[in-house]
Image (tube, rainbow, N blue to C red; front, side, top):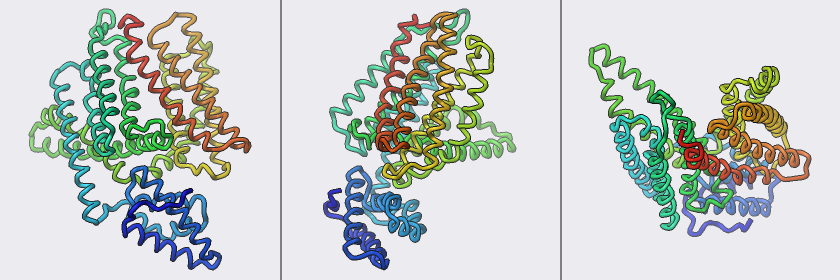
Length: 459
């Protein structure tokens, strides 16, 4: 740790550090030299976090919290000052400069949200469901990417590359001559695969904008992972509240015999849904100091429950008769559970102190990985058996590829966790493996979305 403070620190930061230092020196077991060393450590952490994009106040709060995982003194300080820290986490700063900056950010985001709403409205107005499903991601994600490009001052060459790739992909997928299912007007398999895999590829492309173009940075990639988890939670909360408000509004107008459903469907929803999504993103960005709190807490609750679910799923697979007879819907559910497992692993790993020794929860995570590996292995065997019996299809190939991608991720995670728990490796290796493997999912999603339609005759 270099121990260098940020250049030209603000008086507010100095006041917080001074209060922290005075509190530390009140401890009889802490000497002045000890306090100076701890302060040097704290300042170094604040400088690193500030360089990553946090403001001084947020950097101080996160640094104290992270030191609390490593040092008993900081942990006690965080505990005794929890009320003050919590208020600073949830309240918008009163300083004019920071307040105006937040308002400016929100103003830019609201303008972009309106643009996304207009794009979605145009898709809805086209009246073509297939066009809407294929282009919904293009109508929203570029506006969120624009916000990141503006807030992070994305280099022009990186921005041009992202725009170029997005435009090319959008043109290609819209020019593909997708076929309908025989004798119906229902889109064929390759259309469905493209529509479902395209958002995944675009989302990880969005991560490049979120990282400010520095996608090779492990820290930036992990920040994007945390952002994704928190965004889903914030958006779900906004959607629940908005849904309740919408239901009450419809009930009120229904009592007076006023039909407002056409307005809601044609105008409100096209703007409200993308708007809520972008506002949720702004909330996560505005409260970066709590990004580590919500999703990891949920993983603590759902990890043991998911382990039980995996064991039950494994029993269902191995006792359900011949592998070739395993129901296709069951295999799809298995894949969804495996994706959930990896999400749980990602968010618990993202919030863990990499320097802390192995704990019981780490063993629980290893058990989760082993159970997921067992389920994945049986699911793969079932898929291969079905392909051997009935031949290749786009759906089967996509499912097989996804399970292979998941298998490699699980094997790598399990092996590195095992090495760490046996004290033959570091947790940092487990951490870095997660973000290093993310491009693999984007690559497979892009292959399915772009290559499968021509490979399988657009059927």
